[in-house]
Image (tube, rainbow, N blue to C red; front, side, top):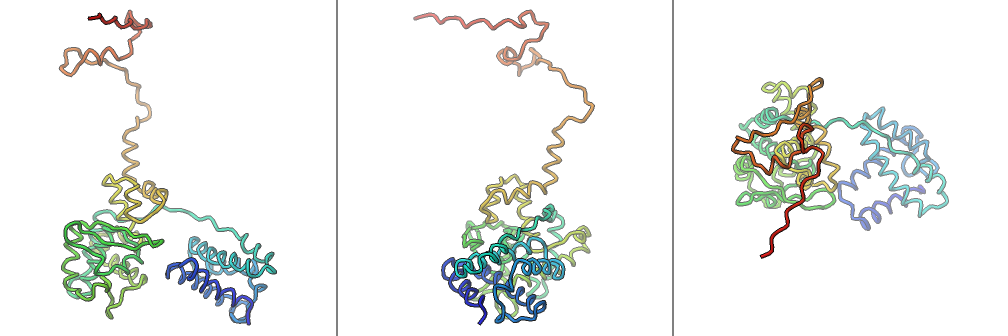
Length: 356
């Protein structure tokens, strides 16, 4: 038996699921990481997973695997770092079970995360969002579903996993319309729905019907859509919308673009960052500061308040005493001009009050 097999099985069944109660998304992401690692090892070393030992998973091999993910599979630096986090978690767990491999494990844990560029977030302008929402046709039920889904996603800013998990019972369309969401970290939140979104959802939910526990946006078999399916339908309708809005062709649009669009709409409407973080389900306010960097209108308003270069400095002019808005107390509080004979003299002390 492989020396890593017992530790790997114990890590998934006892550590992740039993002790930490990790979400199914976390378990699936960590599982996929090891599936990719085993496929890489089978190709490079010729060993199957049941034949691998700790000596086969040294720091050189793990670094080569991470390079393989970037160069050959074309993943981003963020995805590469996420795979490294999964491997670090397992090696940290294995260090307590196999101290005889402490030196090898320490070298693997010393592999650093890679720094990455942080581009500005991509979002849709109002005309682009309108073109996208009008792209799905309403002749078929899938088109009516897609139009309701896109409208719902742009207004609520839900993640792809949250969109696919919304059930019929989670949506309230009456007074105080909202959707109940179970987001990252098993945190529940309620997101209000606008009248426009309610108008788009009401006919779809009437047509949808079904079990209250069923998904709001199902596939042909009645099961909930996968995240990959949602990503593909967003891309498909974005390409169709370029005929009415050519600027969409220059943007890489995905499900997260709709989430960014929701955040930018709230920011431009004067909503503070704390409320936006609560709306999107973020714990840290620093996470939503990326929208401040992306808002060019905010920077343009700041630029408009500055003085252009070469402008002559202004000179203070006191208000006209004949003006109705002039008050003597306002004028007395202003600093005295050097030409004023009282300039430089301390103000007169207040007069003592007479006793009754």
